[in-house]
Length: 187
Ligand SMILES: Cc1cc2nc3c(=O)[nH]c(=O)nc-3n(C[C@H](O)[C@H](O)[C@H](O)COP(=O)(O)O)c2cc1C
Image (tube, rainbow, N blue to C red):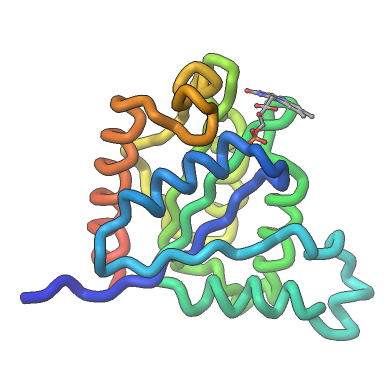
């Protein structure tokens, strides 16, 4: 039987052009199974969450965020760690997506978390915070395998344009395979 087509939404927690986390996301896109459709949700134009703005109706960027999450079979978040936590842009996007509290698109949505850092611990604390937020919202977060790429600056190709480390690439493949199983578990 042919593999079932799956839609995966991706959120990058870094807005930086040369982001290591974006490079990690690109490895995922490169290694994705053929029957996966992966699409990034742009979060850079989402305004700061404000209940007064929300009361007037979701801005277009927020509508797009919610629709993309709702339509997806699963969401992969690839994010840096800032000051031992998750970046504000990522938390902000999740706060918008968490609304309305009853009926959020995050409820029962399969999620997987990944991250890269030049530091040794590879975003463990950032992922912990994001996991806590998503748990509060009843999302289904894949427990493992985890992707926490430490010393990422030493894992690039010679021209620095991509992640070239074989062990990291193998781990990404394992992660994607596990996420497929995780998503199908809830379908
Ligand atoms: C405000 C700020 C705080 C940071 N805090 C951490 C941290 O707590 N842990 C860590 O591993 N790296 C930290 N870093 C370093 C980031 O991991 C590094 O800048 C990384 O390149 C950001 O991810 P990106 O390349 O995807 O943009 C911090 C960077 C910034 C700008």
